[in-house]
Image 1 (tube, rainbow, N blue to C red):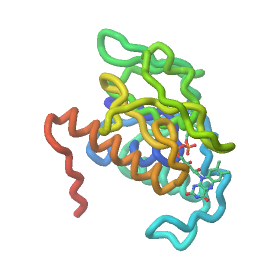
Image 2 (spheres, rainbow, N blue to C red):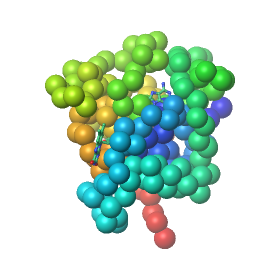
Image 3 (cartoon, protein in one colour):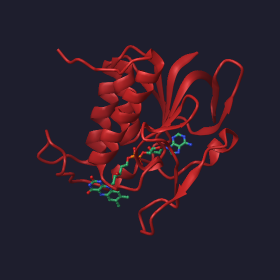
Image 4 (spheres, rainbow, N blue to C red):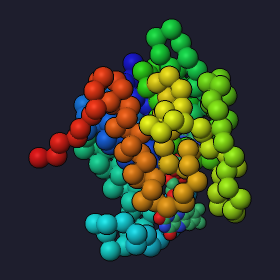
Length: 186
Ligand SMILES: Cc1cc2nc3c(=O)[nH]c(=O)nc-3n(C[C@H](O)[C@H](O)[C@H](O)COP(=O)(O)OP(=O)(O)OC[C@H]3O[C@@H](n4cnc5c(N)ncnc54)[C@H](O)[C@@H]3O)c2cc1C
C-alpha cells in the first residue's frame, strides 16, 4: 500500500512526487514518457536557471524524487478505481494500492472514468487541452484525489506546472496530517 501515487511524471508530477516524498510519504510516480516539456530546449522563465531544456529538467526532477526516497516507474496507467481500502491503480504491468492519487497527466484522462470526476472545458489553442479536471481551490478533485498542472488548468508554462505540483502536494499533506503542512528546508 503506497501513501501517494502520482500519475504522470512530467513537470508537475515530478514536483508533486518530490515534495510528498521529502515529507516522508511512500511515493510512486508512474509515467508513460510523453511529457510536453520534451518539446522545449530553452526554458528561460525559471528562476535558478539561465536556461534549461525540458529533458534536463525532467532528468533533474527524477534525481530529486530519488534523493527523497520516491520511486519512478515507466508504466502507463490504464485504470483507477476505489476499493474498500483506498484506491487501486492498474497499469499495463501491475496493480498498486494507494491512499492518495495525484493526477498530473496533462490532457490524458480516459483512465479516470471510474472515479466519476467533473471536467471543465479547455481553451481553444493548438497545444492546449480539450478539458481539465475540475478541482476546488486546493487542487482536490474528489476524496483522496488531487490534480496538478495542465491536468487541471490551462496555463501553458513550465513554471506554473511546477508551482501547481507543489500546491497539490502541500494541500494533500495538509489534509492528511489534519493541519497546514509546512516544508522546512534546513
Ligand atoms: C510545443 C510546446 C512548447 C512548449 N514550450 C514551452 C516553453 O518554451 N516554456 C515553458 O515554460 N513551457 C513550454 N511548454 C509547456 C510545458 O511543456 C508544459 O507547461 C508542462 O509540460 C506541463 O506540465 P504537466 O506536468 O502538466 O504535463 P507534462 O509535463 O506533459 O506531463 C504529463 C505526463 O503524464 C504522462 N501520462 C499521461 N497519461 C498517462 C498515463 N495514463 N499513465 C502514466 N503517465 C501518463 C505523460 O507521459 C507525461 O509525461 C511547451 C509545450 C509544448 C507542447
